[in-house]
Amino acid sequence: MSSSSQKEIRTLKDFLDETEINLLECKVCFEKYSHQQRTRPRNLPCGHIMCQDCVSSLCNPGNSKLECPFCRKGCRKSETSVCLPVLHLLEIIGRMVPDPPERRLTDWKSNQVAKLNSARFKLSASFGGWGLLFNPTGIAFCSNTGCLLVAHDGKKRLSRFTKNGKLVQEIGEKDSSENGLVYAVSVAVTLDGFVAVTDAGDRSLKVYSQAGKCTLIVKKPFLLPWGVAINAENEVIISDPIAGSLILVAADFGQGGIKKTLNICSYLSQPKEIAVCQANGSVIVVEHLTKDNKNSSSTRIKILNNKMKLLKQIDSFSLSLFLPLDVHTSGVAFDQEGNILVADVNNRCIICLSKVEEGNVFKHIVASGLSYPVAIAVIEDGSIAVLDSGNHSVLVYSP
Image (tube, rainbow, N blue to C red; front, side):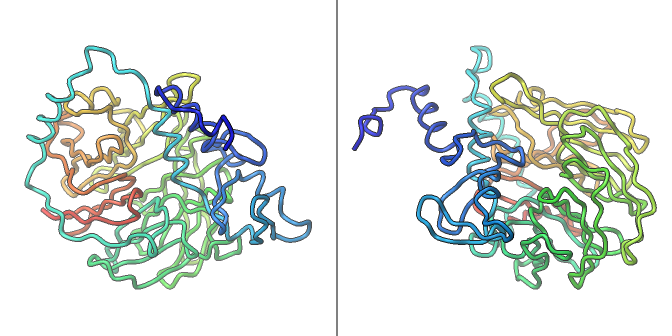
């Protein structure tokens, strides 16, 4: 064993240095992994990892086959998948900053969480797990069928479940064909029952019928489509973190005809997760803010009215006053009463805030059984479905 492999890890700095060298850089080109398309980490079927650029460059000329440079096992480019654990590790390490003395109130804050952990919601069902869901990223409830749709990294990118967890349909092949999905990020269901999905792999919005047929693909003007939501006019609103904007798409989803695409909000800072209130048209958008040159990031929630005028802004610090750790928002939704639901990966909980006009008032927190909550869907009976990427599952909480 080499001296470098025998090196003891004595400090946090040693640990971070070793992690960066051994886990967070591509062992083919030695570029650091990131969320950018070209340096995004990819899993090969053999278990080895390399960046997107290296996967593409190792493909044989004229086809999509490649050979793993470490074990020589062959595979197709379409058989690789995004390595979400590495991306999650990048986010966690990027958020590691020393706590100032005045913020060291963990014990007191933990007691506050216990007080806020209301008995209003109880875990009523959980399903999925590795084998059914692979690194899930988005969830939506379909009122037309009473089912939940989950976007994930399996061979078929969209899975439809009953509220009790029975898998009833899989659509969206893991490829770049006309009916396929390369890397599904977020999913929403239109008022007439079509399924809208953002595909970061080929930077498009794709719409599917209930039968699983792709009826519409929109690529312009997106740079990186991410979050997706449906407004009361049955129009699709998509966030684009690279463009820093929200894009509205109006279309005939059945016939596949685009009526208009419109940039409705610009000058946002890496907007990702979004939600729309059906009652008044308010829009929640989560900005992911870079704090320094070490890629340390925080989140900020902006609430806009239906004319895209800013109504309220909520930063991580204000949400963190009653919680042990700084809040990092990974998912948002409006419940049926217009309250704001926030998924927080740092504190592993779902926070319920009061309506926009009532101020930032904590109503309750769902904290049981969550590992890495990334998205929320509100079910018609008042329950909420939480997508947990940490254990590849869906957890349903009922009032």
